[in-house]
Length: 387
Image 1 (cartoon, rainbow, N blue to C red):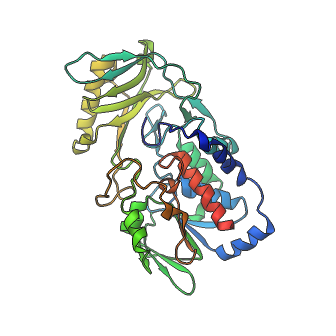
Image 2: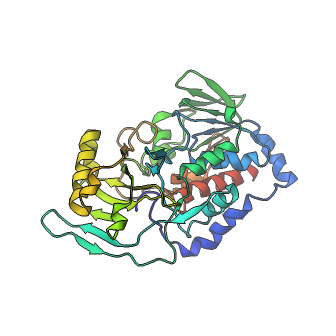
Image 3: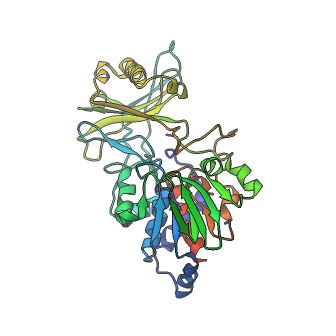
């Protein structure tokens, strides 16, 4: 499992991460609240997991914010759709683990439930088209990957429900931020203006560099780094399938597939918690972006027919998403290595005399790119506002 999916293990950070979980659940001291007077009008740009979590933390202190979201939906890189049988199907962030205590704590606080990713049975590895498919079984893990019952979007929906809906402005893409004597003036592509004392950018850093004009300009070294920060999910193609029964399980398969030769590169069982709605989710190879949706579907079904049988040819639902739209990626970022400049030191600083902060999963020094990183970033930004 890749972006937002597999779990990197930093055992040395586990205790520090646990402190992040609990620190923001306590009431702020009078001194801290006094400091918040410098942040009377807070504007959060981006209604993804970081932005919504930060707004939720502030709401618990009765501090209201305005959230400007460029797209027509909330959730950012979390996107759950439903199939014909209302099966929750993930086109975005999906998995987390016991090594991610902040998301665990947030789910518990919001009354949401997790369950382990199904992995029992024969898994498949396809090396190339002219060699037999290899079968293997995954040993039961003491620290499995988890999914959120009802779909990952239950998390962002629950955060949204804790906020004043009128404070979230959708289809409001920020185009410029100007520092004035009155504060920071935010202008949007739909010709609206917002005045804030503090602005927090919860966006992919590359978009900050290419889409938002700042006056005065951000320091040259900051702008240079922002253009080179890898945006997680950018360029990925996530696909989902829904079926009326779990025929692969009935035939002894786990639903897990890895391939070096087909259009599908990774795939996983996507059955719901109650095990009454069934499907797959996974990733397609990057070259598939040049195909039409129908062509991608055709290639997916042919590969699955070969690997798990003819029953795969009749899904109730097929959908996919190419994560390259204007809210994720712009131009051609300079990326030479995975995690490039994620958690860079520029994200520790504030700008415009402490009035502009940059948050989001890519800014986190730990678990950047994952949902855990998004929540860590929100926690860290919250503390900055009180210190």
